[in-house]
Length: 165
Image 1 (cartoon, rainbow, N blue to C red):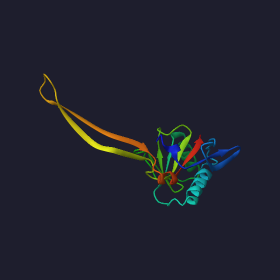
Image 2: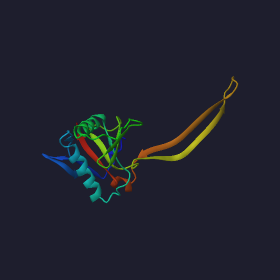
Image 3: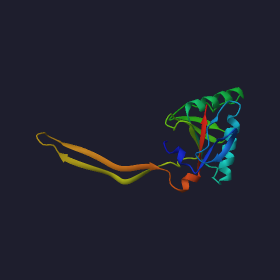
Image 4: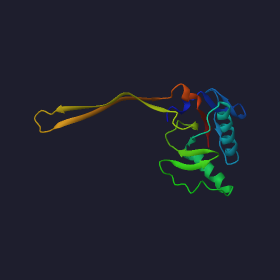
């Protein structure tokens, strides 16, 4: 999740105005139960303006933002579909599948298409088998060359949200 901030658009605060798109020069918005619906709605608006297909949209949020969503949903009488946090899945909210993660960079969360941050294998898994001197048996040594990143087109299919609770 270290590549969340690699999106082509950052969504945050400029001066005293929230819900601004721009560059990483924006500062963090503050999420509250009073503005969380607007925050997600404006985020969806930005995605639609960028012509991001409205299929498999996800939000990956830190636990403190998820707690605000839970409070808002509970106060409106709705539920998060009897969700159980399995593999970080926390239900649906405002058209997004919610995932909770502690692995986000501080002050960011992810809104957009699923799987836009990629694991790239530069070389397939190799297995080296070595004889061990003065012992019976062999050592099996697997190795692979890989990297993570965001491919050019994928940078346009999600937004980095600068936001804290």
